[in-house]
Image (cartoon, rainbow, N blue to C red; front, top):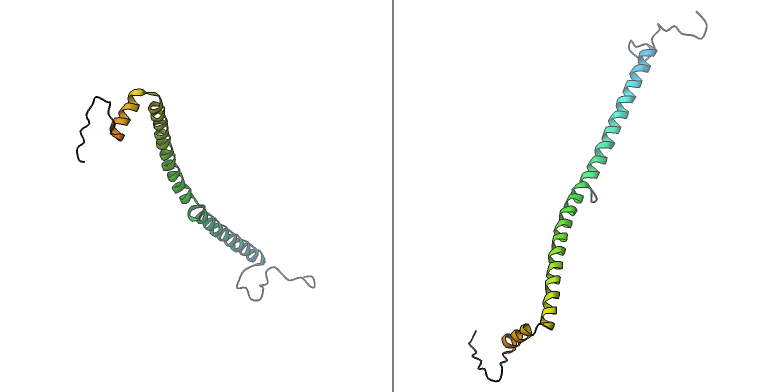
Length: 120
C-alpha cells in the first residue's frame, strides 16, 4: 500500500458503511430529486399565474365573452342607425309621411277638415 493513499475498503469517518462511489451516487440522486422538485414547484407557480393572474386564462375567457356581448350590441345599434337614417330620408322626401306626421304630432288639418281630440 502506498503512502498517502487510503484503501477503498476503508470507511470514511461520519459515513456508515457506504463506499465513496456509493456516496457520490446517492449525492447525485439527492441533487436530481431536489432539482426536479424545485422545477416542479416553479412549473406549478407559473401554471397558477397563467390561469389565475390578472392577465390569466380565466380573465381572457371572461373578456372574450364580454367582447361577444359588445359586438352583438354594436350590430344591434348599427341596425337601429340604418333604420333611423332610412326613416329620416323618408320623412324628408315622402309627402304622405310628412302629412301624416303633421296630422298626428302637431294636430294640423286641411281647411275643410275637422279635428276631434280625445283625452289621452
